[in-house]
Length: 413
Image (cartoon, rainbow, N blue to C red; front, side):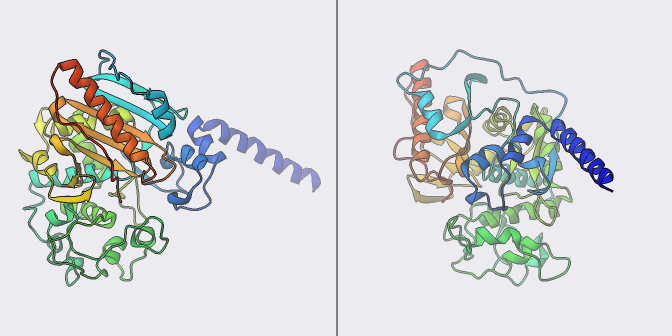
């Protein structure tokens, strides 16, 4: 009996060793720092460092669906290195706890730097950067006729919302986070809507759990009269696009953008407890491919020789519908807007895509900020980096343009 038990233990050791050897470095890192719960806001820094590069690798954390790239890759050639004058990039990377910075100017990579043992081949989770990609899929669905108008009520495409506070809210009002429905996006409160809605289970069979949660929320203001940041509504947009198109969001993003535009790597999109993409969050992609998405937006939404979104979509999507009262920033169709026509996708812990069409500039950043929203100064520091890049380009071209300015980043709060 003793020999039999020892034999079983030996087999388990061998099997465990084989499993460990089958993992890549990022997967081993997350196993060594495995979180004890699913609430990323309260994970230790070392756990986040490991997890943000491999959230899609362990179903115990979350299931994921692949966003397939195509055969051809959109080229990002090296350009003349950007001179940031007196800006201390090394200190910036360290202070930001930065994993990646990629700067593309005139279609060329003029600055690329990595940290936290991350590199160009890795994928980092996006958090709310995904919101801007989700809103783009609304544009694609509109162009294809799956959605008739942004002024259609949500309940036209999600009949389970009829009779709720969202019954007469329009798609446009969802995109601009102006539904007037009561919502708490307090990341420090474990009882807030943003903390609990993802774990909600539907009270009615056959009704999506997110839809069921959102349809129970009360009206607080008239639709279209007030802006309030609301991740639940972005997730609702994702459900609406899925229902309107009959396609998973990962497949639709691959079909319309990822493959035809020429993203270099497959990406992934984390799934909710009902198997739907978490459309307000959680696309795992390489920094260069996120920069490519910025180029796709800056180019007006063309991919594979065809138009993906209606003519003028990105002009409308990045024109502020509301001034947020946060450091001079506006909000449009799930994009933050800056003076001078610049705009950005922005996510917790320092993820971002900054687009400045006037300078033909895209900046992609990945970080693990020590305070999730960047309200400890990390957000303002990143804006100073954006401004330093803008100044360097202005010096190079001999033309002064509108810059980001200070103070800076309201982020997602």
